Image (cartoon, rainbow, N blue to C red; front, side):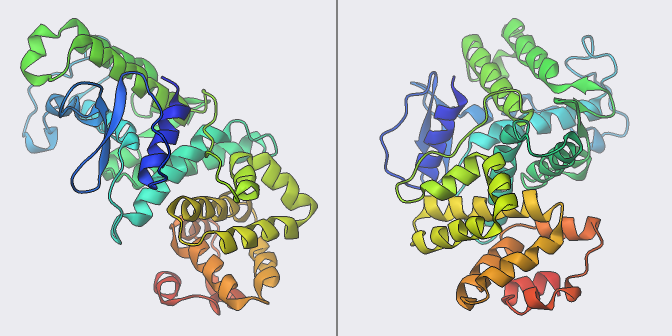
Length: 357
């Protein structure tokens, strides 16, 4: 399956773009009654990709005084215990659920944006040549943290994984995730009859799930072709910067105002069109993660540019500071006190003041 095609279909449905459906091999989106949407096997009613292993979830060892079972893959991964197995299952579910579309509400909107943003950036980061290897390593860890945090996962899972080079690894055991996931699916294909009562899909469909999960994982690891946001008429300049971080960083280094011009035009052109609103949010968070992450004082240039249009300045600053909690973490890890930035605070709305003051 070409992940880019699936990604376009995801965006088409999520933002009601009304474009013709894209044909994806083996899977298709189905819209549910509560406005959620999920990826289903073609011609199979009721079985969603994200749910195929639901009944295979291992028992929770936290509720057993002395867990008396072994991990399913204990013979292959001898360093694995039942606690590790549960965390790896949570990661599998988290990665697969990246394909699911949730109904946005005030309680999940921030997490939904952060998870999708971080997945998209992880797919792009390896190709950003204007960042040093150390900068890319910092951002890779940052994006992974928030991708998991926004799912959300429990604390044990949140801190259980790290990158070794481009490989995602279970830190405690040193198990590399791709061979583990591959072996996991292969086990249930090979032992299908033993687990027939827990599986609602056929062995060839488990193989299809394996292929898609590995594609999703390799995108997180930056090993596959980067994802890009599809075109939108009238939004070409913003999308060029979103899909090419190098171009944004080059333009910013040459003339900051050119980037701010594109932000201004994008804000003027959103007109409450959901996909454009999403792209605008991505553009602003790129400014947060690729500029402010490394030099927070660059915020002064943004404020100076937009100060003449205070309503737009307020909109942009509050989206930057309150659409996600990226800046909270950036400021905390760099010991930045927002009280030292009065020219920024003066544009804060009630929500931003609640968060930062």
